[in-house]
Image (cartoon, helix red, strand yellow):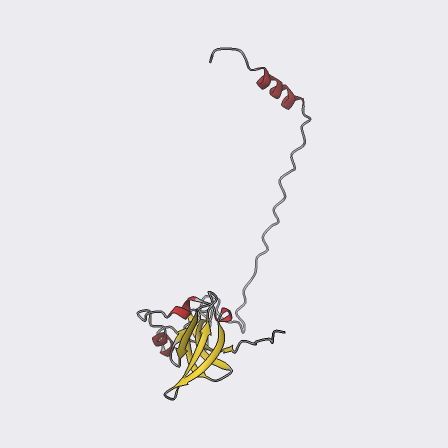
Length: 159
């Protein structure tokens, strides 16, 4: 069967392709010449020296807060904007916050606990909000501290 001459459909396809009109190929676009830039250092900083920053490098005091050996807490898995404060309580004079994660699990946290994906450490808890201190990269190899809040969830009355 391999030696048979039953390739009429192949011959027909070849004739069909040969009968098509050819189109012109577009010419290669012209490459614009490179414009050189003459650097004059009068009053400009050296482009090969790192610009000074006002942030603290990872080895400083902020670096100590980024302890890679610390066990991460469950709420550090979620971004802050996905967490909701659903209640507060005080036990033996210590304030606690009830935080609901995106999976609808409610966690009890207190001052010193961590939450959010940027090393957010809880610094205060009030009836209406939880205040955190986050450590975020500054884009220049260092880190900066930033305040963040998680406000109480607004509940609407249902008729």
